Amino acid sequence: MKTRAAVAVAPETDLEIQELNLDEPRPDELRVKMIASGVCHTDAIIRDQWYPVPQPVVLGHEGAGIVQEVGSAVSGFEVGDKVVIGPSFCSACKQCLSGHPMYCEIFYERNFGVQRGDGSTAFSTEDGESVGSHFFGQSSFAEYTNVPAHGAVKVPEDAPLELLGPLGCGIMTGSGAVLNVLKPKPGSSIIIFGTGAVGMAGMLAAKAAGASTIIMVDIVPERLEFARELGATHTVNSKETDPVEAVKEITGGGAEYALDTTGVPQVFSQMTKSLGVRGHGALVGAAKLGTEAPFDIGTLLVSGITITLVIEGDAVPKEFIPRLIALHQDGRFPFDRLTKTYPFAEINRAFADSAAGTTLKPIITF
Image 1 (tube, rainbow, N blue to C red):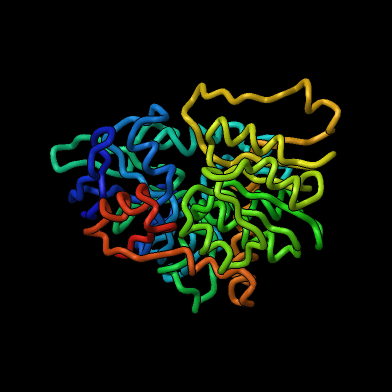
Image 2: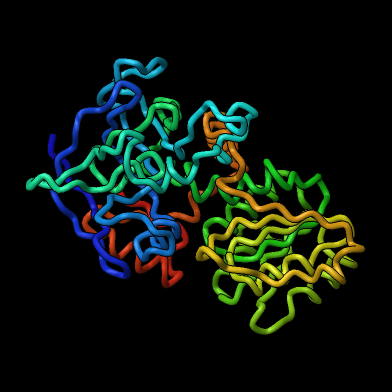
């Protein structure tokens, strides 16, 4: 069948909306009519080749849609089901079997290989040229796409699909790092570096978990003000104030938990120094391959801190995404306040607004 899709053709170049051929779904796949897809920082860095992903390719990995066709080997799904699509994983390796599919031993191949295991792609041009597909198991910047069924999460019939796509990556990453990895106790303190969608999702999760001191750090005053509005108890403009000194003063020695959503080496270093004795910090921000960050092992040795590098919130999407939906419905996780919708034709404006920081979480609607 034919489908329109936004194709990444070169680094730092606008995506091109093209009409492509979409092949038949494999026995283990679903064909999904996309309703909406979030735009994530990872889409931008892959477009710009921070990671060596083959182009041309259809990106997008925060998709939500309606099942149109069910592969012959798939059970548990029917045509018409509403789904949010998460990352791909093998379901068979030690990490998948132990409940940590986001650390699948072939996660990179599955999500950045932009092809099926047999080397085929779902998309092609009229001339027969292969176009990369299955980015994060979905390539959701397309009106129709074929996805591995294991990555799809059924959601209730009344679920607002135009809103829920980012639960499959950006919102899951920030909130999952807090709820699944850091696990702040009620009454505890946490510092979060970065007030983008991932950082704000982490903040909302910390609030839902009962943290009583929530410190947000950024260099954009408007975002810090918005963080206060959403529940931050303290904000620090790191252009004006040393965040390490500020958090020690606020907490009386250092935060119990910390989250770095920036992937900036200097910020990572600040996070490690902001923790109190036996504090726990997590890094979720993506950096270019080979990026190294300073870590003062001499001074920090006696602090007993724990630092965890986290991918996709260490979530089990079929369990975690419904939990986030329930928290949202209960009014305890208002991530909808982070979003702004754009028509598919304006996808490049959504990328630009995200890069400029004027929109926290763009969502493309089809």
